[in-house]
Length: 340
Image (tube, rainbow, N blue to C red):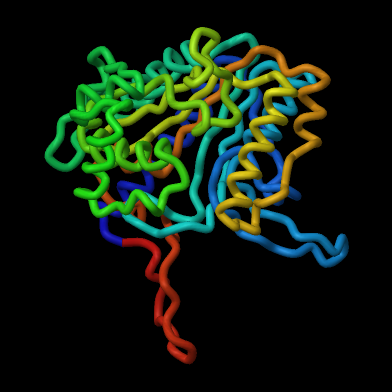
């Protein structure tokens, strides 16, 4: 290891310890939930599948702990968090590793607005206690955590930052083609629109920015706005063109949740995604029948948090042993390549 690499991982350890202290000081209880799930849930992602020999059943490495953490709120715990690993069987890139660390927390009798406040407090606390400054340097950018954080709705961000309107199908479709996307590859206009949104808006999200009011179809576990059921009570937190956090006012109506799950399964069936098609977490819905209190929840990716605080542009440089392509059979490496 180089001295710079060692410094990165020492800072990572201090950040993780700081995150834990932040929540325990606010009377959150740290908990552990299952890593292997009978049904993939809590996020939309392709899971890793394994087989339990004794039970003769397939299990899925968790893509998120959300549904189990909210069960704990049903059981009477009011403030919980878990800082642990998630697994998503998807691409490897400078900002994605199939095995990654995340903190998720849930608080009864709170909403996504309370989560916004907690997010700002968390990031500023870490900057003050770990770095001693609220000014971060990432590539050519200077990111100021001390200034007021920007807020845009999903629609406002597309118009003001991306130069497009949600309801201008012709312009959005033309932009999709310009980006190399084929509209015929998308089952709905909304899905095409979201892909265009990511391409034209995210490059502008350098300073701390909350994006709110995402489409309901995009967020099946989030409560819809009472005045506009097509939009959710949610935010995503972006900095340095990265999504750092995602928060909801949690959906706690079991009937609506069952309907959302059915719609999600129907879409998976249409896409011929056999790994998730036909799977509804009825046990979680039964928990909602017993009563999930009004609550807010959020997740923050620890690996990307470390990238932000250390100025590293590649997730491999903040993970001690990142996923790497294996050598051809019969070829052995002389040393671990994980730390740079």
